[in-house]
Image 1 (tube, rainbow, N blue to C red):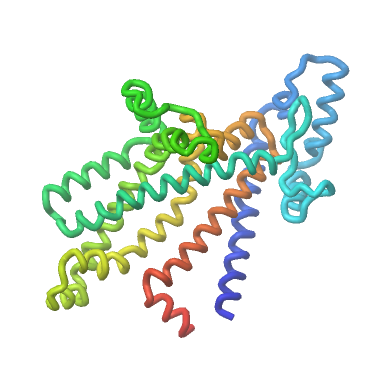
Image 2: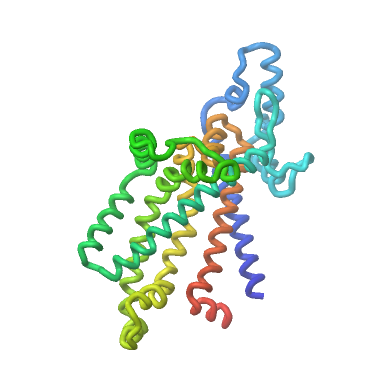
Length: 330
C-alpha cells in the first residue's frame, strides 16, 4: 500500500509538472511577435504561397485560440492522435516529419551527454569532498575550495568556448566540435564527447564537492565516528565506509534536482560543440517557432526530470537505512 501511494503521488506530480511546464512554454512562445507561418514557409507573396501558408496555419491550428491549440496538443500527447502519433509533426516546406523521429535521434544523444557529465562530476567531486573534509583547514582544503568557487563563477558558455579554443583548436588534443555515434566509432565518440562533458560537469563538480565536504565535516564529529576510531579502525575505512554514506543524502538530492540544470546547460553546450541533441532540437524549434514540437520536447524533458527525482528518492532508502526503516514503520 505504501508503494502504491508513493507511485500515485509521483504520477500526480508528473501530471502537474507536465501541465505547468508545457502551458508556460505555450504562453511564452505565443508572445513572440510575428507570424510563425512566415518563419515556417518563407516564400514570396503569390497565390501558391498564400494557399500553402493558409494550409499550414490550419494544420497547426494557428487559426484557433491559444487555449484550444494547447488542449488539442495535450490530448494528442496523452492519448495519441488519429495517426497514432503522440508528439505531433515537425513541419517543413518539403513536407512533415514526425516529432517522434526527431526525439528518437536527439534524446539519446542528450542522455549520453548528461550521463557522462554527471558521472564525471561525481567521480571527481566525491574524492575531493572526502579529502577536503578530512583535511579541513589545510592548504589543500583552501586551494581546492578556491578552485571550486572559481568554477562556479565561470558561465557555461564561456568555459565551453575556452575549452573548444584552447584544447580543441590551439592544442589540438581532441576535436573541438561534432558528434560521432558510439556504435559507429567508440574511440572517436569518446574524443568528441570529452570537451562537452567536461564543460557541463565543471560547475557540478564544484557544487557537489562543496556540499559533500560540508556534510562530511559534520559527520566526522558524530559519536559513532569517534567510536569507530576508538576501536582502531583505520581512517580510510572510517571515511569511505562509515562517514560517506550518511553524508551523501544532500549530494543525492542536489544531483537529482540538477537534472534540470543539466538540461538547461545542454542547450548551450550542444550548440557550442555542434551536438545534435535535445538542446539543438529545442533551439531549432524555438527559432522556427514549431509550437507542437517545442511543447513535446519540453514535455518529454519534464517527464525525465520527475522520473529521475523519483529514482533519487528510492536511492535515499538504499544509502540511509534510517529512511527505509521509517517508511516501513509508517
